[in-house]
Structures are given as C-alpha cells and as structure tokens.
Length: 414
Image 1 (spheres, rainbow, N blue to C red):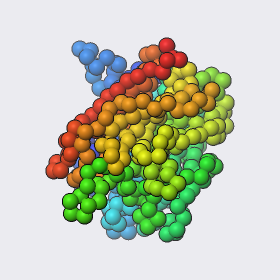
Image 2 (image 1 turned 180 degrees about the vertical axis):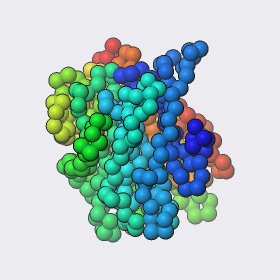
Image 3 (image 1 turned 30 degrees about the horizontal axis):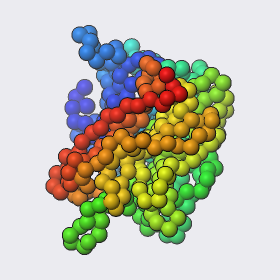
Image 4 (image 1 turned 90 degrees about the horizontal axis):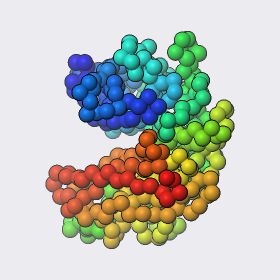
C-alpha cells in the first residue's frame, strides 16, 4: 500500500474482542495534500503464530475531509476507533491548517468490518460530517473529538443496533461563560446495502454542570494548568502541563449485560471550588437494547483537595465494576499514574489505587501525551489493563517518556 508508506501519526492498536482479531490503524500522507486511512486486520489473535498475516486497506480520506477557502484540505486529527457489530467506526477532528489548526468540525466514518475480517474487498466507507456540508471558513467548533462506542467483552449488541458516539459540549465561546451542563450523543445508522438510508444524528444529553479542566474563556482549547513540583528559574512559576480538558476522553466502553446495555465515558473537569484543581467526571449511559442511551448515573473522582487528576480512560468488568485510570500531579507530586474503581450496580464510592509514582517533571513542553487506555481482558472479563506515561527524571531537552502497562482485578470479579 504505497498510500500508507508515510504515516502521519495518531496510530492505534485495537483488539476486536468479538472476532478475536488485532487491528492497526493510522492516517497516511503520500504527498500532494492527499490523506488516506490505513488499516491492517490480523488473520489470527496469536501474534506469535508462524501463519500470522495481515489484510491491509487504504481508504481515501481527501474526498470527504473538505477544504478551506484557500483550497487546502482540512487535517484529520485525533482519530478515535470503535468496534461494533456492523462495522468499524472512526472519528476525526477537522483542523484548519491555515488558521492555527482550529477545529472547524468533525467527520465520522463507518468501515466494512465484515469484509475486512476475511480479506475481502470492503464496501466504500460511509462518512458524515458536522457541520454538513463542511464549511470553507468554519469557526471554532465546540463539540469536537467524538468517541465511538467500543465493545467490551465478547457479547455484541443486538443485530441492527446503531453505533453511538459521544462528545463534549464546551461552554459558549463568549469570553465569560465557564460551565456547561450537557454532552453530545451521536446516533450513526449504517445501511451497507443501500447507503442512502444511512444517517448520522446529533442530540443533547443533560448532565450535572461542569467546567472543563483548566478552562480558559479566551482560549478554550488551551487547557494548560496542571502544576508540577519544578519551577521555571526564569519566572519562579511552577511548570504546568495540559489537562486535555476540552474533550471527552477515550474510551466509550460498551458492555452488553443482556437485560441492559451500559456505556461508560470520562473526562477532566474542574474539581476545586476556589482553585483550578482538576478531577475525573464519569458518566454511565444505559439503554434496554433499543432506543437512545440515556444518562443513568455519573460522578466525580476527587479523593483530596490538592492533587490534579487528568487524562482519564474508563472501562468496566463483566460484573459491573468500573475502573478509571488517569495521570496525577500537583505542586508537590511529580506526574504519576493512578486509578480508581467502584461498583456501578451498587453505586459504591470510588477507591483509589497507586499504579506508578513519577520521579520527574516535563519542563520542555506542556503537552502531556494526548490520551490513555483502559481496557478489560477479553479472556477472563475481570482483569483491567491500563497504559499511561511517566518520567524518571526531569525532561529539559528531548522528551524521553516511559510507558507503564499495568493490570489489576477487583476482588468481586473472579
């Protein structure tokens, strides 16, 4: 696939739990302002097998990304993936490279999972945008970074069940409003036989009021305020990193319990009443297997009044225990990794656990990664796997981060 020789970042490695296959995906830039979405699907779940091979696909993105007034194609940023019964789903933020990479909209696409799993020629991908049509001079889009539902466990949704996505609803960009009381739900119905019947519909879900983590009324996308112990000798202020509080964070973890469906998602919100301290807001959406999911319960993980918790990822095991992993930092605590867990059906209080203490700060950049990953082992349905980053020493020149892969079980799931 010559269109995929030059990958431009945002690579993802995903496990299709229902089909027991590995997926690798990233967007490619072969040149000339062209973009492709490049996907490889394994023929086995055993990556050590002598017969391991990959079915590879390159889907042209340029025709569906739109262009600005100068004729330049919008950049497909922050792709996020969801495995569903009738397709693989991916979302993109559309960034205007001629306007400081401002997000002007989103793109959501369905890929033909059925044929991709067998190495057959897939149907053309089906894509929708918001706004539609994609504008040539868009303004700041405040409900960006869609998260598609991703199946947890091996029980798929009912046949014909639509895919659902969620995104934040940032406060109005009016220079004064700091709170929001809703998030966005997106219903993606795909018809592979007759694509004209496919639809993509947005609705609003009312939630408890929140201020996005490190929110700045003048620069809503610059959510930098999480402090580190180190101070900048030039001004004496503590170094700070980005909470990525302007969006919901992957994953939208979906689990089918038979009598109901449960969707979990989380994001970083302001938790301090008089300070900028951040905590983790989470939501559980439920439905009975038909109709739109609705908010069933929610909460905020904030065990103390000093530490900033940010960049979460959430999932739940087969008996309804939720676990959210996140980074933690403060004026006295180097950025490290923690998690909290609780039981959703019994609505217990979150209990925090330490995964890895950090030993250094990021002094040469405010970008603390982009996102983390919490998943549940598809074999036992109990073991949580969490991936995040930390430093062993202060970073002053090039970045040299360490990756931590942790696993744990909740005692009630055996």
